[in-house]
Length: 312
Ligand SMILES: Cc1cc2nc3c(=O)[nH]c(=O)nc-3n(C[C@H](O)[C@H](O)[C@H](O)COP(=O)(O)O)c2cc1C
Image (cartoon, rainbow, N blue to C red; front, side, top):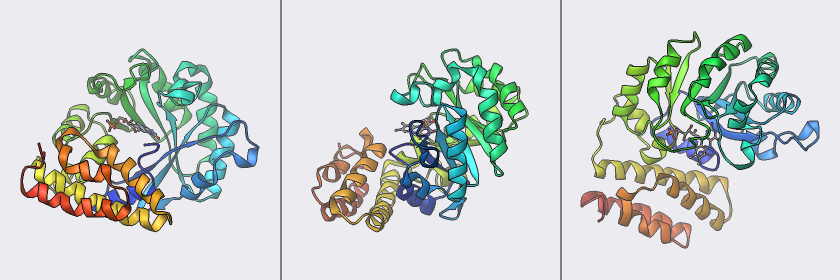
């Protein structure tokens, strides 16, 4: 998740209860730059085959075939083996022909996908929505994906036009699974182990991709595997967040020198995991003026877990 699941967050999640595979945030392909500078230095620094002991998939977001291929080759030279193309992002600049915008020009997809497939020796996958505005568009795209030789499909079961409104339509995911020979990874609103396992079972998907849910419950992967309680109490959830935040403070401290930078990163991660349930417990963290105060706040979370975790 761009701006959220950076390397430190991925590390903290991998330490708590790892998924099978990690994805990078999307790496923006610079169309206006020279061929040798399609990806930023920061993105190239993130490109790798493995991260924290897990396979890493590098995700690109871009528009035109030439720059996309050059970016894929640059990522490969930097160490990437597995590539994913973002065809789902509904926002801002990304929407103009990139990300979800690609679904508005499906005629160009065979060329783009084939070209990327040809340069990637490792897995090549796409992450897409059900369609631009028509949730049935996916069924016209499946033969295109299959002909291009992609390895698997990650499906966020909403349309681009829908953005994040409503609920992911996993009944359509189930129809997609039986309509293609490609492995389908279900994505969208999988925020609890019970819900995730239900979707896995009901859709026949080959796997699940979890985004926001892993920030709200850092033990979600463990719960999905049956290695942590499937229905955590508010106190258990708060303790999972506390341990995650501790790991995150440590990881950001190692990545950045400046206190202000570490604090800003911690607060941004906090806002991604924050929800109403942790109201008062998280208040001290939101107000912290230094990393030290933030870390003190992390330790105090245990007091809320001992009492009423909602702090209401
Ligand atoms: C802040 C934010 C950033 C995101 N960035 C990305 C991204 O870089 N690449 C991507 O494929 N999806 C991105 N997404 C979409 C999520 O990966 C996911 O498809 C979507 O949130 C639905 O899944 P979830 O309910 O498990 O979060 C982002 C979503 C959010 C809210």
